[in-house]
Length: 309
Image 1: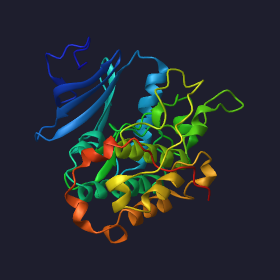
Image 2: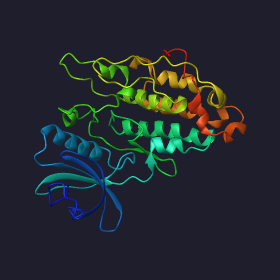
Image 3: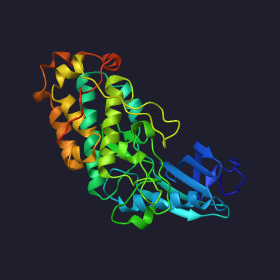
Image 4: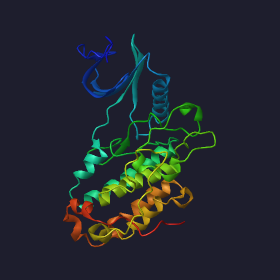
């Protein structure tokens, strides 16, 4: 989908950016990796001018969220926006690194892994502190750079609580296997509840759980209007619990069914994981050389019951 329209990539350009590869093309919506004049990588999201209004609202919402986060460092910077004869586009900074899923699978030891969780929790705290709720956290829209700096992408259905008009009419896009229980309900007006810092906290903790024990809390959701219940997690065992003895309770608090029982703020959430995974608070470091595949083979979960308070 370039300036010459019709999905023809032969020109390999869009508004002066050289297209390198299509990352996702679905109907009138596409995401590309491109380059600017200096050869720097750029991410481009585009929609056809005649696309459905809902698709344009998603693009408008993402642009509003990215502009709101300008300078914070946890989301791509907007480089250019525009309209051609056939489409609209937003060109943004290409974040170096790899998705969360790839990075955690390449972790070499418990010590290596122990840096990732606090880094992700701290980045989420910065995101919320800047006034944006992501709403759709999963293993592919969390980007980890080589120095374990964590940032986020894909803000199509995110929320700016102080500017609710920006996301009005945008249907939520949610990874249901990681979704907080309250997001499965409907408001009296027949709409899904808007994501909140508490629901983001739950989703990120559910992603941590998935990584540590090798399975999701909640099975695949064929119909989110009739969700399967989340698994009641059992205690962490083995090297994970031995090195980080306070981690099970920390994780349990973030995964509480009731939002009021989770950490009061995302800053508290980040501080709790930072404390729980600080080597000085764990066992001796001789287990640091153990490889992470052992973490995914446990048949156990996280905690025998939900934390309250």
